Length: 411
Image (cartoon, rainbow, N blue to C red):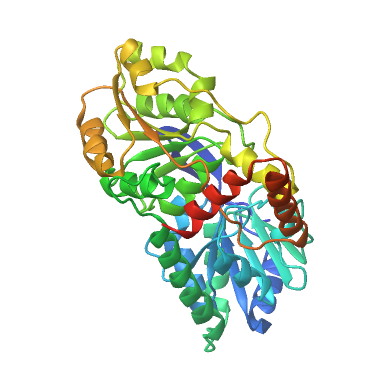
């Protein structure tokens, strides 16, 4: 690792100084050798790619490599990216999953991607991270390098051969286009058809939010819809508990972001369970008079927990929430509250909330039975889901199975 001068950086308005880290010359030579002999390279770009967007695009262009993004890496990697093939992991897409599984060389840049079952088993794996303790922590690594992504790419970009074969890249870029079309087809809202599809809520939020909006999402299904439908453009931010999966993080993070950036729009994608856990923050928001816009995905359930129980073959128990009218609750403490039950009313209500001068809460009644499918289904998950369906029928809850089919098959 070579010593480099220090440079100032800014993170959420805070000035800090961090070292420029670059692998040693011999490590760069080994990296160049591995990349030059590779036939099918896939890159995974994480949060460590912040500030290295142009360098990452140049590298992917020379390697003809599809780029799989992590959830924390989306805001730094996804925009203006012709090599994008989406996410992988539990809330990812089949395009990202197969782009990793079918490569012969997997290059991890600035990510400690935690889902071991989604790492390729047969590929040569290279990991570049500024934190040495992350190297090889989640998967075996054939070459682990300590370095900043930007400086590491600078050191190797002129020394790698530009590849001519584009089949691997083209295959998964086209696959991602198909996946994206399928996801957009799910984000529909027909007037009078209740309850509202949560995908439609997220899509309309994305359409109406400002170009430099800061989004904050609760864990569970709000994170799924944020990951799949909020567009990152290089100016927007996406906050969440993506490392620890802590519930009820949307409102506290939004309060902090709004205080730090009073002139930017801050929007939460709150779960009903998450909002209920932090109701006291409504009082804080009103007292501080900060104009956070809260969108509550109100499905009267801990929905992601229910999905996990279905996949494991269990009947749902203890996941139902008896919710108040959150809009009325907000009004009771002086916050502008709107309740939406019909898709036809969603867009006008969002516009009203976004234009309101002060905090606003939009209570949207969404469909409890919406499935968020992972990019690949294991045999155990399929068996568990079939067991859940059988138990539902035998226990007299077959109507839930019908509701599930109607929601996910008949849009």
